[in-house]
Amino acid sequence: MKRSLAIALSAAAVLMGLTACSNPELDDTEQQSGSQDVVTAVEKDDEIAAMLPDSYKDKGFTAAINANIPPVKFVDDSGDITGLNPELLRAAARVLGIEVSFKEVTFDALVPGLESKRYDVIASVGDYVERQTHIDFIDYLQNGTAIIASADFEKDQVEPADLCGLSIGYTRGTSQQANLEAANKECAAAGEPAIKINAYQDGGAGVLSVKSGEADGFWGDLPPMAYNVRTDSDMFKLIYTEQDSVVGIGIHKDNAEFRDALRAALLKLVDNGVYDKLLDQWGLADFGVPTMDINSENSIGEG
Image 1 (cartoon, rainbow, N blue to C red):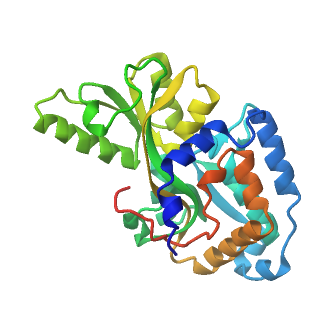
Image 2: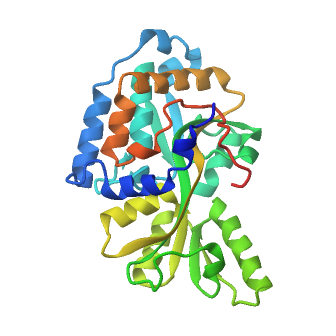
Image 3: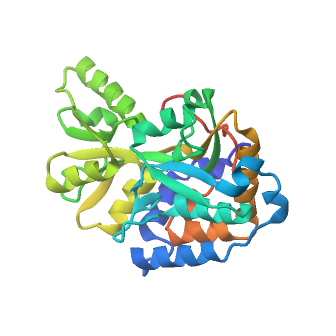
C-alpha cells in the first residue's frame, strides 16, 4: 500500500513538527509515565488473541532490541526499556493477552538473530528489500537519515559531497556506512581529502562523540537525531536530513501466523487511538504509518 505523496515529501514539515514536539512541556519522565498509562489501559481482544499460534498463548514472545535510540527505544534512568517501540509492543501484547519480553542486543546482531530464529521479533530496523529474504516487516514508523553536528559547526546545511575532510561517525550495521563510503568515493574523484569515517556500536556513542568534539558529525536515523536536537538545542543541530524509508517490526517469514496476529493487534491499536497517543507522547506524531503495511512499497534497496 503506497504512502500519499504529501507524506512522502514532508521531510521539512516532519522535522519542524518533531523539533517543536507535540508536548513540549513534557520531560522524558512525564512522557514515559504517560505512555505507560496508555499501555496499561489496553484490554485483550479475544477475537485477535484467537489468531495466535498455540505455542505463544502461554509463553508470550521475545523481542530483540537495541535500546539506545531515544525516543524510539532506549533505557531510562531506572534501567527500564522504554520509548515508542517497546511501549507499542507491550500494548499489542495486551491486545493478544500475552507478555512480551525484551532481550538487549547490539544493532548488528538483530537481523542475524532473527534469521537464525533466536528471537520471535526484532524491535526494530529499517525495512530494506535485501532484508526481506528471511524477514517480513510490519512497518510502523516513517524514517529518514540525518547528520547531527555541534551547534557551533560552521555550516547550517551540508550535502554528502561537502563532508570531505570531516570526521563523521555511523552505527555499525546501518545504511549510513554505505552512504559514507559512497560520499568518500565522490571526495576521491574530486581530489578532495577523504572523510574520516568512525564506526560506533550504537547511536548514543556516536552522538556523544559529537558532543565531546571527537567527531564533526554523526550520521544516523532522522527521528533519534532530531530528538537529540529537540532535547539539547544548545548543543546540537541537524546539518543534513532526508526522509526516504520506513522502519518495521521484523518477524521471520516462517512465522506468518504470529505475524498476522501481531499485525492485527497493532491495527487494533490504530483503531482505538492508542497508536496515535503513543506517537504523541514520544513527539513522533508526524512519523506514523497507521496502515501497518507488510514489506512496504517504500522499502528501498540499501540497508
